[in-house]
Each structure stands twice: as structure tokens, then as C-alpha cells.
Image 1 (cartoon, rainbow, N blue to C red):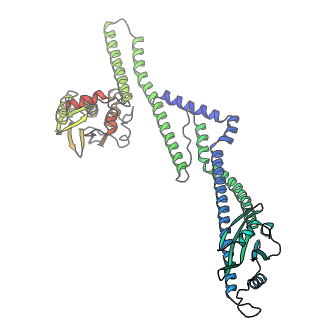
Image 2 (tube, rainbow, N blue to C red):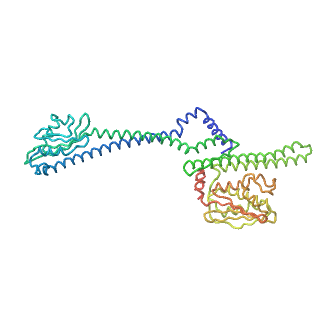
Length: 511
């Protein structure tokens, strides 16, 4: 990504920060921001859950209520049955067929529960009932009482009234196959259901109060959870093209912390990219300014002497050639970041090593040696590898004398191919070994004119990394240096994904 593109993106970020600083946008964020939406969804979900829970609890209470009343009705009928089979407490004798006495004793000795009614039907008519006040539906002339009087077997059921439902259990009294009476236990549900509804209303009030308090607490908690996002926004607003040093403190290990870490890493990359681009422009401008100054100075002082003119023209052409090489190197480094940088093909390591050694011997008069030739084939860009090794060989000639050894070699091992250039020259200071692969980097004792613009080793690293490989340096001051280009025999998937289709077809056909 170019500096201009990054500057444009940063400008958009800054413009977005200015929009966010607009007061009208602030009100919009209050009502439609993430914090408000989180709270709204929280309230909706909690309210819906509470409503469903209340309805379910209410229904469960009604079901349990009816079951409890049914058990109470069965218990009353069971007590009445035991009394029928027992003795009259007033005479001490069995009741026999004296149904009236049975009703009289039972109703006098049993007090019904609230909203419960005990009815005694004798010879088809309502004989006694308890309590003394009963609903109109259960009086003598009611249709339901007349139906109960005709029962021949135990019956239970529910009767609907304007005041509510009534549960009942009726048991006929039979002697010698003849129905002598009917005992009925009835229970009105209206009162109990009203109690349940009152309990539900209290529950609604309590849940509403709890929901309000929980919503206030959720608003505060949401604000604290989203605080890193606000810091992220503020940091983005504070970032300018000249200040990319702001970072956000990472707290915790959740998703927000992950976003914070990612944002800080993005700022690190942006800061590194801006710094690199700025240094690149400064160094490139400096490198170009020097030959331009030399050319201009000599042309301004150019005289009429033919010999002087010839020398000036030679010097100018030399400087122009150096500028041309410099521009070519810059274009190469820029192209190294593009997907079509490599043209992959099947390369024989043995023949490539011999070719590299033959070309390297022509660079300078040194004690050239071919240490080893690897055996096998690799998938790589033959021209780019040649360029990388030649740069390393040229670099070796600049730090050695005629009596020094420069050795080349290659080997295939552990799925990688290694090409190395070793020399017995001056070596590289330990302080310089970590930075010499950077653009425009030179060693502390480098000779500016002979060493070029400091792009050779940067090009070597770019070619190696384009092959998903690396460059390894081993050097000792005063002893010499060894540069090793390591690339995989089979290209990595990311290398193949960037390879144009016509290159892939060409490589396959060579196989």
C-alpha cells in the first residue's frame, strides 16, 4: 500500500472522527448507539421472559389449586363413607338405613373450608346444607341440584357460573339397590382464583421494580464493557499523520480486549509503514540529490577544452547510470510486493549452481571456489534467484581483496534448498548484522560510492521472502561472512496463489 493510499485512508478516519464529534450525531448515538441497543434488547428479553414466566406460573398455580380442591372433595366424601359404615355417636348403634340421621350427624360435625359447600339430598330434595349461605345455583329449585338428585353413581365435574366455576363430587347413598339420598361436596373457585390473581399482581410489581433496577445496573455495566470501544474511538480521533504513537491499554482477555489488541497491532503496523515510507522517501531523495548535484555542478563548470568536456561527459554518464540502477532497484522492490513478482518454473539445482558460479567469477578477481552442488529439482523463479545470488556475490567482492576467498555452493536438505555465498573478507560488525537487510542500510565502515544505494541486500531478502523463504547471515568481524538463501523445494500455498495462470501452465508443461 502506497503512502498516498494510507494517507487517504487516515484522512477518512479523521473525517469520520469529525462527524462523530457533531452534537447531532451525539444525540443520535444516545438513542441508537450500541449501549442503548444493548440495554433495549436486554429490557425486551427480560420483560418477555418475565411475562412468559408469570403466565406459566399463574397457570401452574391454577392447576395445583384445582388438584388441591379435588383432593379436598375426595377427602370429604371418604369421611362421609366412613360415617355411613360406622355407628351413630348419639345412640351407639349402626345407622342402618337412617339416611337422615347420617346427614344430620355429618353436617353437624364437619365444618366446610372457605368457599366449600356440603349438600345433603334426601328423597330427591335438598334436605340440609352447610354453611347456611350457599350460592343460588345450589338451592332447591336449581337445575344442577335436580340433576344430582337423579344420580345413580359417583360423579365429579365442573359447573360454570357468572361468578366462576364450581368443582363438585357427588356420591349417591344406596340401600338394597334403592337410591335413598345423594351427598354432594362443592367448591367455588372464584375466591381461590382471586387470591392467585392477587399474588400474580404482586409478582408483576416486584418483577417490574427488579427489572427497572437491573436495567439501571445494566446501563452502567454496558458502559464499562463498552469503555474500550470509546477509548478506541477517541484514539482514532487523536491519530494524525504525524502522530501514530497513541495506544489503548488492554484490560482482561475477552472479545473487547481482543479488539483492543488488534487495533493496537494495526496502529503498530501503520506506524511502521508510515515510518518506513517516510524514511524511504528521505533516503531516496538523498540518494537522487547527490548525483543530480554532481551532474549540475560539472555541467555548470563545463569549459571549452575537449578533454575536459570528454571527462565531464564520462562522469555525467556514470552518475546517470548509477541513478538508473537506483531507480531499477526501487522498481524491483516495489514489484516484490505484487502477486506477479515471480515466474515459477522447474529448476535444476545442479545446473543453476554451475551457472551462478560462472557468472560470479566475472565480477572481480578473487579466489573463487565452488564448494558443493545440490542434486534435485525445485519450483522457483530462476532469474530472481540468479539476481539474489549475484547481489550477494557482488556484495562479497566489495568487502574482500584479491587474495580473499569467495565460495558458492548449494544443497537440498530437509525439504529446503540452500544457496550460500561465503567470503573471508572484513566481516560485518554485530551491531550492523540486524539492519543490513533494510533499505538504504549500510555498514558503519561502508564506502558510499562503491557500495551503491544500500538496496542490494534488501532485494535479496525480498526475493527470498517472495519464495516463502529467508536469508540467514553468519558473520564475524575480521574473519568473513556467509549469506545463505533458504527456500522450500515445493512453493508454499501463498506463493502458488499469487502465481499467474499462464506461469502455472508453463511450469507444468516443463515437468
